[in-house]
Amino acid sequence: MSRTVVVTGGAKGIGRATTAAFAALGDRVVALGRDSEALAKLPDSLGVHAANVRTARCDVTSEAEVEEIFGGIGPVDVLVNNAGIAITAPLAKTSLADWESQIAVNGTAAFLCTRAVLAGMLERDAGSVLTVASTAGKVGARYTAAYTASKHAAVGLMRATAAEVAGTGVRANAVCPTFVDTEMTERAVANIVAATGRDETESRRALERSAPLGRLVDPHEVAATLVWLASPEAAPINGQTIVIDGGGIQA
Image (cartoon, rainbow, N blue to C red; front, side):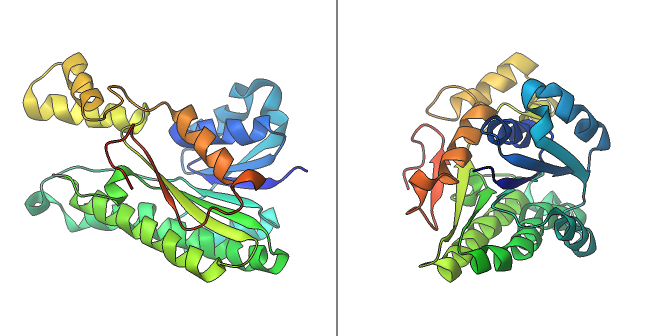
């Protein structure tokens, strides 16, 4: 049976791959985002599955916009909290604005969207809330104080949600990938180039070597994990963080 799936940050990177994966299953997917150009291009880029996808511009850090958008979508079967940003800097040089923006997008947005769908899921006794966190939601790393704190917040929200829905047909889980081959990682490579003077190839290779995989994670690998977590076969899985890094973090 076709489900209604909402993917935040659904037009690019992991979000785009996730939108495509659920649409390929025949689900009705609503991709949310702030980049109007990327949203406009999304359906046509999905080929035969474009008819299963619609897009909506939404700032998921805005309570009013989230309430308006979700109020118009109707019952949601699967929510993928994927919207995210990353800004790196030493803690002493992290601005309050950068701290607050990462907490807002990576943490508060997941809270607002989860809150918007949870009551309906519990009423129907069915639903899956999925959060795209990061290995930074499991461990700390240099120069990522705000990002790491925000991803720990996202994981903590997921665990608290899972505790509330335990024993029902609703579940909440998170995935924690290492560096994924997306635009966000391209920006990380650019930061390494600027900070170290290495060329782009060498900087990218440094990120690839940081994970046991010896390469970046493909967005479709993350999407496949999310699709499985939302499937009936994963019904007993609740409150878990699935680390996608090739074995660097064993949790």
